[in-house]
Image (cartoon, rainbow, N blue to C red):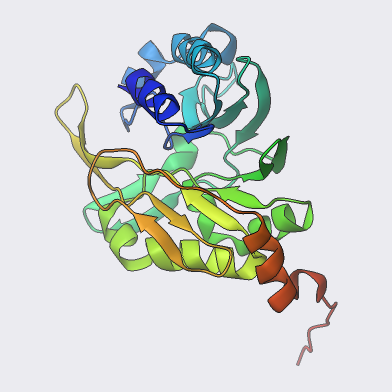
Length: 259
């Protein structure tokens, strides 16, 4: 399905294609993941996507893959990749912020039990702009996005597998806020629908793949549908938004007053 979507996008003229978080598997079954996940160097999905980027002649953002790491505690990596049109990996990013939350009595997440957090922020320079890489729960931490923008990012990527409850309440607001604060485009490719594990347990994701302008406008939202969003970007809009509100250059140090 991912390969055919990339091929179709390329045929329709796309030069940059993005996929959601955990494009290879949506699962909370750690035993199942341990059986089927691979190290990066052995992962067949990543190898196939590199071939697909080369065959289609596109830049490809794999929103993230769940991968084994070889860590002593057995935790996985939630890792983004940017692949160029020759099939070479130009950037990697391991998700920094782990989603450990009790959304409700019936919806509890402990991402850090299965995944180890990354420690390094990543930008990637491309012919069409500088990308700032983030993943899903990162969107709640504005300092990361400000740092990426100040490091040169024009386009912020937020691939996700957001929960329906938090997605309905916060997804659009958070994406628009990150765009407004940084004057960047925000591109958020998102998982959607109901995902079943081999044990029969279900997990639902919110969907609403979106594109947000540097001024904070929703340029497109495909709702809960499965499909591909097409969009042309004009980096002049980044420069214009930052000229109107140059807040990236207005940092000031401050002190706390203690009683």
